[in-house]
Length: 634
Image 1 (tube, rainbow, N blue to C red):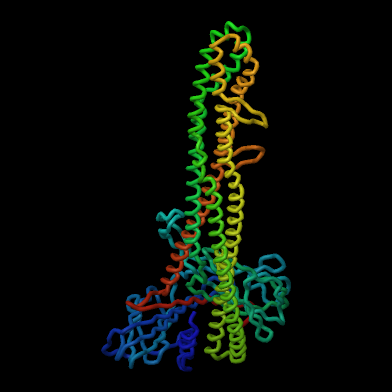
Image 2: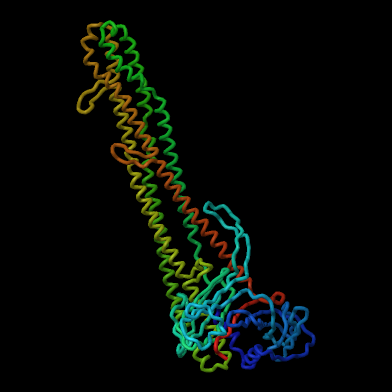
């Protein structure tokens, strides 16, 4: 609402005000119409007055139309008014006529001219309103309430008839364009104003968003509503000798507040970063899985057979002599195999595991920065809410003053309109700050936006904590390269010999050379047989060592226990990061969808500027006023 324009167009000369009052009783004048010309521009302001009985049933609909014309000379008026009747001019020198559903007339202008007229119509109103009265828990017809006492409950229900079906387009979380057909109601901000006589009634229960203005012993309760398509509110009073003033419901095509949807871009960037980390973890898992597949093809039966062959050698020197050459050849093959295994172990292939923790740390830092940004937005919203509160306080004082003057001078229509306009402005300011309820779903105000940003900041903090925890767990992966180095060193000792647990242990090369020496003489083999027995037992342990290696690699790929430490697998990191990314992208999609629907509703409200129709090329503004008959008043 623009207060300057509001006051300029409503503080009219006394003569015009009197003419507007005459609209209610149907008086008017007429004038002749010489040669005319088309206005340069037309601003059409329609005010629809719906006169209703105490239950909300419409008994008469009157449209007062104000045309602001610019141009020189005798200007032609051609304003659509389909189905209209009982046309009355409210401007001296303007004598319009109804011609086939169009109000036609002319007015002399020296640059700008304003004309007013009224018509009656049976056209369907955009809003259906009903009022239900209960006294001490029992529904009572309004005509039976006057003069009674008790607990009075007044329930006002509004149904929005302006349903729209439209295809909206928005981006999903991956940046792809989506189209969806949605159904919504054209936003209609409704502000019922209940005038309560404090000498007869005490308000026991009122809606939380009710705004109260007190003038003397009269308290006015203004309750913003947004029927999409339905909304209701209830006022409960302790009443004595019931008498109710007429109830005025002001209706404006308007979407009071819109959420800040810019956060979707930042969330999409975070999701992209999470996808990159998930791909890195998945690639590392594929490397480890390939190593495991290679180890599964390794046959350890020959190593175990060598240990079993030792018992056979002990059964007799003759068998040992015959088999010495074969055993030596077997040991040589084992040495060659170990050469290949040792050469193939490259701990450097897992350097990326160390980078995973650092990358997670950087992502946590980025989320922390986004959380800081959300906190800054909260600070800005707090300042905006404080500013709106200051404007509300100022407007409330002006409203109370205007209503007091209007009560003091009930015949002054200017003051009544000023008081009503300021009350409407106060309601709009309240909706801007605190939002309203839309079919059980909130239409957010600045306070709702702040709550949403605060929830986002908290979510970012939780995301940062989660990433930090993952990074801490990922630190255990740094042990894997060292484990491979230990394995490689153990295999070298197995091949070449070395110190194991503080004792010198012969390797497979020694075994090979020793077995070949058996071929030189039964005596030398017999003397050295017992000393070599431990070497063959070590061969049997090699199979167990490889099983331990496979277990460690499996834990690295899919999670498990290594050296009494629980190790999260690479698949856990990849799946967790992907789940985070998918969740964020779902949120981004919902934000974009909400923004598209909100934009469609705003466009529909902005386009609803006329009830009967606009002159060609005219701009329009529409206000609808429902006057619901009082109870027990003349």
